[in-house]
Image (cartoon, rainbow, N blue to C red; front, side, top):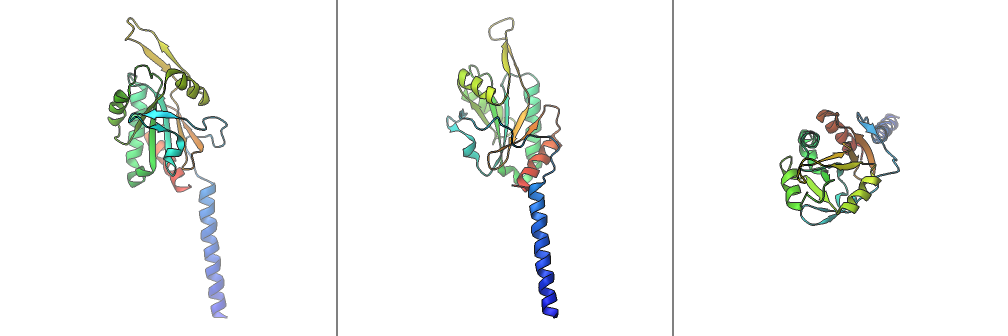
Length: 199
């Protein structure tokens, strides 16, 4: 009878552990905007700053953080990239399971060399991505991103108006989160960790 009671206790504990694990996988607690099951932003195919063609499938088993910007951006892009770098640093060893991708909305200016230099100033593991102008327009449309060149005093003195949201994919390549430009580094880090824990 004592053995039977012990067996029942062990089975009960095992079931409790399984239920707890299942619960944590089903119910992550996100602090940014949950866009799980979004019908847009399925994939991309762009060249990285090393000249390799990249798609989501290349980063299988990693959380992918995608941001559209340009290297000459005077304020918002460096601010967001700085937050992303800080968020990744806070993850410690889990940072190896995250890939940040910076997509240029100014491909006529942002050469692979410029992209590499730019993203590396934030984190050497970050990758800069680009395509030709039409490819960039098509991809921006898929992600509901708007960008437009604003002429300056001279041809080289211009700015790019663009959407500033960050998209985060889970390790299966599914779009899960949208992060706006005012979101803190701590929230970004928290939500990435939630995705890693529940994947």
